[in-house]
Image 1 (cartoon, one colour):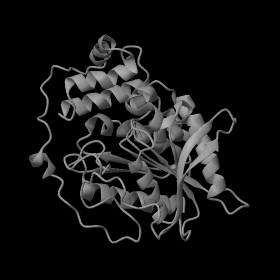
Image 2 (cartoon, rainbow, N blue to C red; image 1 turned 90 degrees about the horizontal axis):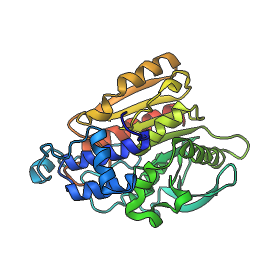
Image 3 (cartoon, rainbow, N blue to C red; image 1 turned 135 degrees about the horizontal axis):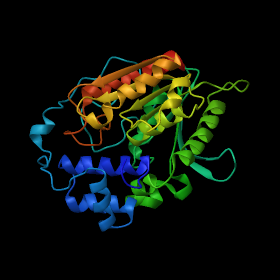
Image 4 (cartoon, rainbow, N blue to C red; image 1 turned 135 degrees about the vertical axis):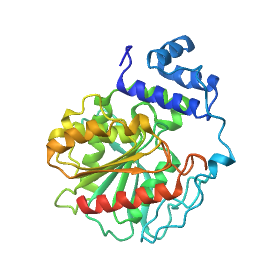
Length: 335
């Protein structure tokens, strides 16, 4: 990587640029978002240039009905737990907090292992526990949003105890940071994120346990959270299973060669920037001896799982297929 940019900064900048080239945001909005990372417009232009992001290249037309038609509504799969909705929605709630399948869903605060900070979290448990483990859900670069809380509740309907933290809890979380969230996230460090996520894993091991033994923990993350999922596996975190959705691979993925985590990597066919990293991941995972698999969903791009992203981006059939595969994987290696 040319320039002084970290892995996190590069990923966030390139993700904003991808939205720009797809016609979802304007040039002005691109520079505004990147400025939260770099500190100013001039620095943003320099960063985009250094990262090979040409703001003068031809762009896709703004998304509209023709693109939306590529992702028609999909019938719900016949599974006993909640899955992504049959079509895109502006309402982030598909599983209500008082859903009868849940035994409770609430915002919580937990201390870090070193007691240096309190983490903002959200948890949900099933009315009847049918799975023995706990699942850590990691959010996109927009924070612990209502959509991610909904995903946590979906996990709970599958019988797991589910939990997620705001990755910028130390800075006040998404409610305090607002539009500056992704830029602030880019300017943190993998070491700090891993430390706070290890605190979340420790919490899950206890909360999903039986009071005598700690529970197994699995993890699933989306976009930026897919990257944090890879980072945790790469660092040797105590995860029985992990499912990164279109997450960027660490620049040095050598830690994957010694992991004991069963990894299912989910990608989007059109998201070539991220999907192209799979051979490097597989080369290391082969050496580990741990179970692993790759799943590429056809006809969709980055962030296809998020049903609040609009009909041109959300792929209901692909999201549902990937989610059923995710729950099957987590059930096999965690539950």
